[in-house]
Image 1 (cartoon, helix red, strand yellow):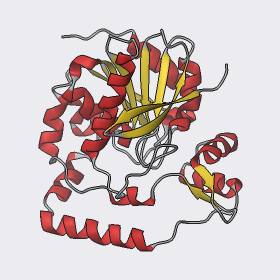
Image 2: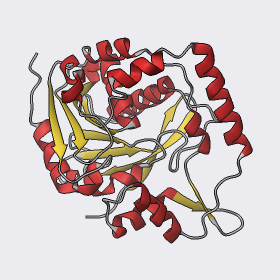
Image 3: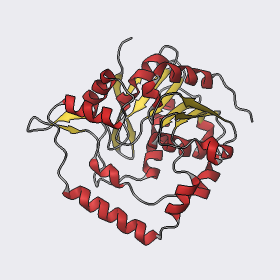
Image 4: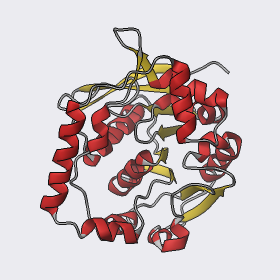
Length: 297
């Protein structure tokens, strides 16, 4: 199958980049990547879903081939608004029906919040390790005074501004670093990711495409009880995915899954935080099964 084609969509006056796969007349599925990742990280899954879906994978602001924020500030609410803009763009191009959304990590968190805000526009939902911190970890964070959290954010942001971009001698080194972060992926997949995650700098070296200031995302957010309560507004059939060897905790083990109206859990064997990279066939089949489910309400 031929690779994806590029397109852009407008959000808050910015032209954000996306890649699309498959027949535009087919049911739309949006794939939202995680922190410091990119749209092309979905290639393995998108190529499999494109046989019967119209697949749209955006580059979030500050990632991939989308522009960085002018002031290098990134807030969760802005990411959610950008996803809402993409959904409207797809629907204005001829898809009057709701869309399915799949999100990984940060992308899963964005997708969950959007599905709670505009549930009528989301037909099916999948979050790969995207609910956020466990209730225990979130309680520890929520207990930190707001002033301390703000000061820590300002300190981190200041240090990141002062740090020069990390120069990478070649794409092979980038692939090695990606495989070090996720040892469960193949070398071929690490090479593919590195090719799309880097760009050549003026001096001939390579740098990551994502904005380094993403490591200091805006500290404002809902506290955990409100985040979990928000999940009850989601009406779409939902699939929660976890990697068996991931550092993340399954929501079935700490009660978070109970906040969803209609959710199933998939644990991918021998996979880490990126189970869709380790088992794209299994994952794509699971998404097809999700798309066949109907809402219980």
